[in-house]
Image (cartoon, rainbow, N blue to C red):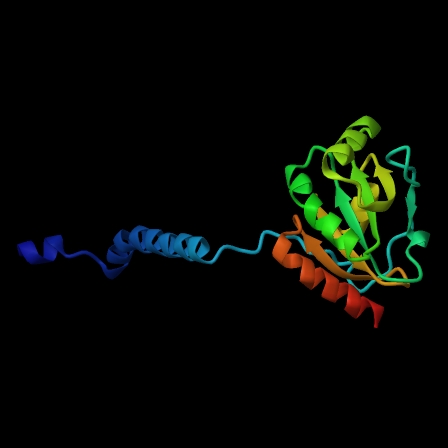
Length: 186
């Protein structure tokens, strides 16, 4: 036999040598695509376009009444889900004050919070809420499809969720929320 025939590899053996390298290259390409185009990490509520779930929450602070789904009648308003321990919730406080000054009625739900902590938070950051319910176990938050705090919902005068804003409200987003409230009134 010649040296050539002894060193010749079958075609299947050649594929076996290149297969790990090909799989590694495919993995690298997938990782790069994931890094360059990350998936949307926000979880939007499936409740947009649907009525608020039934709920009745006790007051979160002494000077405001609690909150129920039946309170959302008449005119559009905002429903803000927040917590005293949430730093972005404090960051959005000036924007909530600006919306209140523009005539927007804002209802609130305090998530997993103590009354004294909510009271201190509102003393530091202002209290834009007409009503403020206490959701100790996040039952209403989960029923709304809320994925965290803060989140703000535009609710029309019939109690239907028209828009969900995930995260803190930034100054440049105030006009957009005013527009969403206007649309909810139509």
